[in-house]
Amino acid sequence: MLWTKAEKLTKSGVQSGVLLPLTDVDTLVECSGVSYVGNIVTKNMTIKHQPQMSLHDPFVAPYDPALYIDQVGSEHICLLNKFPILTPHILICAKDYIPQTSVLRLVDFEAWMKGFSSADTLGFFNAGHDAGSSQMHLHMQLVKTPILLEDLILSGQLPFKHYLIQFEQLDAELLMQHYSAAMLQFDRYTTTLNQGYSECLPYNILLTQRWMLIVPRSTNRVGPVSGHGLGYSGRFLVSSQEQLCWLTEYGFLQFLTDCGYPLDA
Image: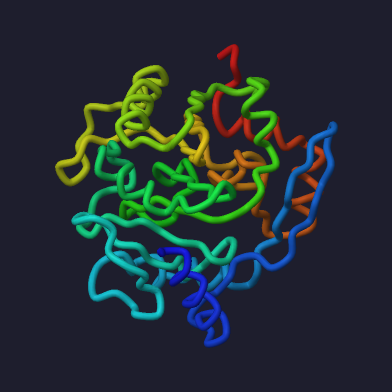
């Protein structure tokens, strides 16, 4: 239901200019037998980072009708991302302001699960600036895309610290249980409060209908490139062909490792 409306709004939004896609062409890169996608961002990235955009919170009412999809439960709403990485690109947002760095709750996972309609749905979460988040109002994201690193993820061969749980079907209580275990394992909980909410150190989540991956983050930038949560699926956003060449030479997995923590750290 969410995706049906999202597809309709996306089509009209792109045509009218309400939506400003950040990518347009996928560049497939083979590196050490593994395929990655590099996206050179469009000029819309400059618009996204203009002060008036950065200071505006698009996740509080009144919502732009061109972006509003539906209410999700009692505490969340579903919106289109005005600056989609892929189209459609939907967001499950807390109705009231909650910091993006706060500890996720069971109700957040319950709402997020409503967006999983097919096997190619990928959810991702960026916990704070150092995990790739540009908007600090709590939101979980969803796109539909092949996951190029899925075989590597499920084989247990990732070279950086991570927490992986596989399951038969999505269950919010199971997700919450393993999320809490990962937060403890990686010492992500802090004693700091942000507007009354307990704050976490940075991390990313990738979520599908079959597995959840949690990666603790140490930094958002290695060399000239920033590390977005989608990178852990095998999709990288860069600002130029030169950056993509740098990333290819540096090594995609090495980049992801340096954004987080090596296994032996």
